Amino acid sequence: QVQLVESGGGLVQPGGSLRLSCAASGSSFSIIAMGWYRQAPGKRRELVAMIGNDGRTNYAESAKGRFTISRDNAENTVNLQMNSLKPEDTAVYFCNVLVIQYGNVRENWGQGTQVTVSS
Image 1 (spheres, rainbow, N blue to C red):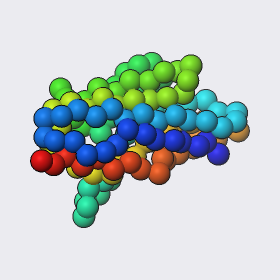
Image 2: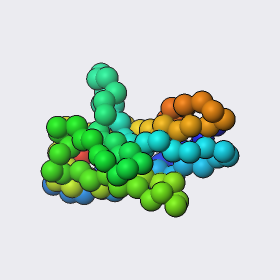
Image 3: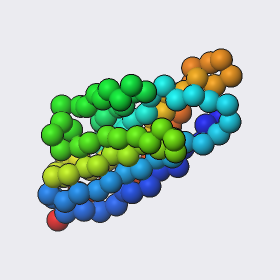
Image 4: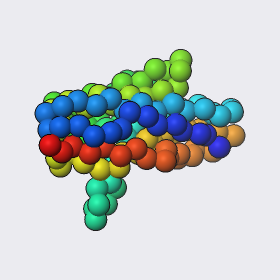
């Protein structure tokens, strides 16, 4: 199993910035893609941004132009820089990592980190 440790959530005022980080660890795995999802109260979990091994990215429309996803392949980490935050960005953010481990494709989730945008 792959362990994911998230950090960087918190409370920020509208227009502010936060940076989320997620580190993957474990044995005998190769990462296919890394990304972030979020879930607001009463809503379904939704993709925020994803980055593949080739560096190609995919962003939700709500994140384009404000959020930037990046990864460090050597450290198995993925970061989400969030700028110009809005109250509607308030949610629990989950790290998501797709790996090949022991010949199987496995999806792994972090425990979630709360992001609250409020004045």
